[in-house]
Length: 602
Image 1 (cartoon, one colour):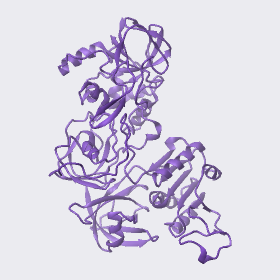
Image 2 (tube, rainbow, N blue to C red; image 1 turned 30 degrees about the vertical axis):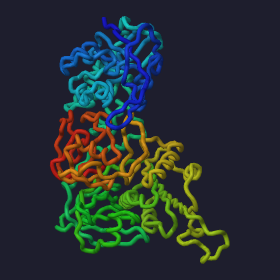
Image 3 (cartoon, rainbow, N blue to C red; image 1 turned 45 degrees about the vertical axis):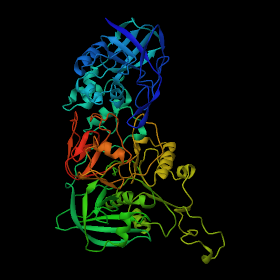
Image 4 (tube, one colour; image 1 turned 60 degrees about the vertical axis):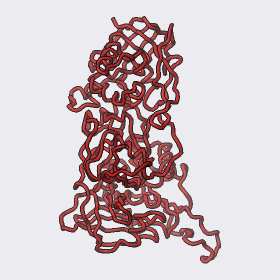
């Protein structure tokens, strides 16, 4: 018979960690006497990061006395006390290799159901002073597990733990944890996991992705709107950079030019998926070449890629391309990459863009037109005015080739007053549009978007400034599109995932403080930073953080793959070997150092 040895609670507090403040409820302490367990937690307890911990599915965390004894020996520690692993219930019995997902227990007056293993999280290592602890819990098959509260009631130390029902499938907590985080997955166990109703939705989604032979796109427990912002599996067409020749430069608007790139050796180029991008490396002055990424703006031919670049007034690389790049110049290009791609299917397609964000969705439109795709297509684009509307005629002609296309253009510049003479119109200001009912003056709103008749089962693709994508994505969700059907591409650094870290004022990425390193050059392509490596940094992630580059991580020990990043070029070594290596062409920056010059899509 298992026994509840200790009830541990603690409210979230701000803890200083590596120069940052972490809001966490990982510090738990034993309490005397009975405590009431409620649907979301125990009286007197709380969680600091509800995205990854807590909630109805993860109301109570359980850890075992036998695991305490195990870690005391493994870590050489004699100072571990109940609650140190962040658990609410310390129990004698209930080992992870025997307790199964869906098992139900009565403890005191309350009833519980096992929902999932512990989420891999750096804060358990932070609490214990053991940075690798998140990895060790998985590698040693001792994660602990969460309970859902089926019936509220009082519990206290000394209560017996009574099994009231075995979960269907007999899949243990340890096996469930290994199924997600360790290689050599058993397909039969994966099928079993997908048929356990009690398993938490986050873990179910990860197992569905694994069943489809995909790397999980997010750490289980993260909010749905973050799904798909990871960088999953893709095979690069060629390693690092190859030399290509500028074949044509075509001005599209006063600020946008298209650059056509040919192979120098006449070999066929790898086929890029519509929506992907190229990374270009140019010597634009300074000690290190600059690397930037630009979306392909059309379907590539066998020997030509097209990118389209907007001249940014303070943009080092875009200024070079517009002023100094010439026909016949040789440039270094990395293979097409990116997971913001047009998916096959039968549902309607919505392509939404603003400004230069048109480029990846224009490539998608090229693909749809080339295939005479029967899916209904909504093309929604926002530009300042007609003069700044890149690819207006090209997109209009492509839409005319589709059997069911809907074109809607918004010009945000104020129209000339009714009756004003042409010379009274402000420069680049759009005039009324007689005979062009698809053009609207102003910005799209929730009501105007609803009036366009976009179906709720459509697959939508958005690209533009972050505020635009937040607004339009919200309109589409309010219109009934589920989050998993709303795909967005961001040209700049991806939004940070730093669980529990208190937000601070956003700082533009910069060179790291302190003396410069003397190691190989590290380039963060999305952020426009190139800096020499220094062994003062524990990992590539540590260097990125020193440069105030937005980063994405959870375990910081190579388990969860939240930090997975495309390796554009170069080689790395792992300081802590990941429990499962990432897919080819990617790297876990939380536990890797460079061995050569490295370019990261970060």
